[in-house]
Length: 614
Image (tube, rainbow, N blue to C red; front, side, top):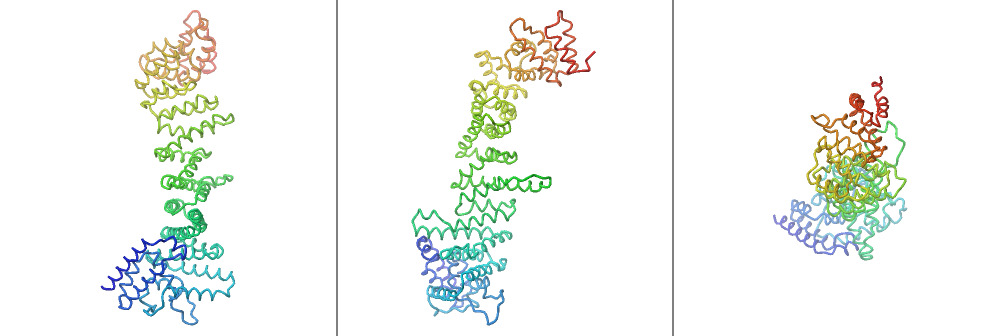
């Protein structure tokens, strides 16, 4: 009990001292724990061994902070028992990881330690001198091979026999060996770093790799950061070449060596102590935009894997944007770039990510909104933009409009100044947007009252789509009436046509023919005939009869407008079918004289419905 009590007191003292010390200058000088603390920890172990308190030793080692325990292991490397002469068994307890286990759990067993042993700091210095002397006659290639094989043996030991503490200490020991080795020569030359990274990747297969990876990254990061600060101040600390080398190698191995559905990459980048921005972005770009190859039918499985990799990359970007401020906006720009990609699947995924997850976040919304508007304006200024480019470039703004209805005004501003080809593309794509926004949106009355000049047809198209699915709210209808009274523009009566009676529509028919473009008149036909199957509703026969009653010679409606209006009827064959055309012609034949457009309509009828030919 006295041994356990002494161990607890020593652990508390070590932990308190660890919090107080200045780690930066000390790590810069030695890359390890302060010698005085190691000496005190060593003496605590010796004291418990002298009284036979093995349980106290194990309890003490289990409570010592992992960095201190790792350095305690390195200090005691010289105490490993020597192998018997002629024995070369790689599994012997004095070799590699087995020897490390002797130091961790066998201080009270096979290693004999007495109070008369020399000071730990002096022992470490003497051991290093002896090792340097032994290596003096070796060639550089032999030294690199020796270091690589030594690390390989330590890492290849059976990890399943070790608990979490042993794994953490092993990671700390390996990391500090890499840091100390980098002071003398680049670790890449002896292959130690590659061996360590390959081992971490292998450990991921048994669900222990992430903890080991973080241990290595944090140890190398803190050690190199302290050394750089000591060498050149804060400016020097921004350059961490060893950490960048380790981070880059580990990121590449995890990305290429593990399946994307495990989401290991996202977890690693979220918890790493520092992200190398250029390295992260280049890896994510390769995942999102792989080199295009000639597609063959056998590539279906490859396409599925590519889609899964792209989904992982977008997930990683989402997490980095939301949780890693240092790389937030570079990653956001990459997601925005994906939102206009040629590949429809990638474009759709990124747009949904932006609209549903990122746009609602206050500090991200303005940048996303600005990009969407500027992208559409950029296409507006390009006279060579194709329909596919315009559609892809407008999808993000459409998606944002469903989340923030006031952006409809920005859409109409761009539309008002756009060339005719771009207007046509947006006009044909707006139906789904209108249905998603809904007739009850408070933005619609404002849009009716103040839509930019030149965008009225887009606004009316949205309202007409909504009117096809039910009567418009009173505020919207009132705004349309006021706009019509102020401008005398018959286009503003379009969305209200379903609410008018048959007689009212027939009375306004000449005005609709004279004032509406062909495209909008066809929309008006659909709205007028929505109630054609109801009792007392306007029928196709009524429309054809009413159009022929318009006399161009009266000067109110141009002849060309009347021709276009009648031709619009023949473009709706499901509505103006054979029976409807036949009934309308028989009704017109009863008139004396025949209407001006009668014979033209007969010719069009025979062409559209050959079965009606006598």
